[in-house]
Amino acid sequence: MQISDDKFDSLANESEQKYIIEYSYAIPESSTWGVLTYGDAPGGIGGGVPGFLWFPAKEDMFDFIGRLLPHYPPGPASADLTKICETTTHIVSQWSDGEITMESALSQLNIALKRHSQIDWCGQFEELLSGDTEIAKSVRSRHNPVNEEGEEDDRVITADEQQEFIEILQQYGV
Image (cartoon, rainbow, N blue to C red; front, top):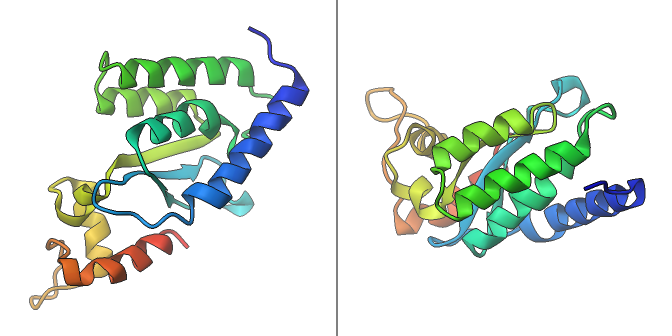
């Protein structure tokens, strides 16, 4: 399937608009789905700065990753965007259908999206509040910088601390 340059431009604009308007300013709730992603380019041109995007449903997250993430950021001009889009869509389809695990999907997506975007994490907001994964603990330690012994504190975020934690997530990577 060949996509015209005009269609690519349209998808890139749609991606940027969705990113700015819907996902980067969304406020997560316990059942909200999120992605921690960054542009896979040198830091001097804006790559490498991670940010959370929040989605009301898992299907919205799948749609963004599969259809729009290859366009934001756009990646190198020499990239075969048609192939990248087809590969990304296929991986997300397998993932959403339960044919592959999330870990396998993220690994494959990061290969397919090399020099475009990379995904460090995806899951529900609740995981960041209380999950036992390394990324959840690392993110929580930004809210709880050190414990009484001077060590990183990755304790669970309480209901009273959630608003402050959300504010930290909104500035994550900045």
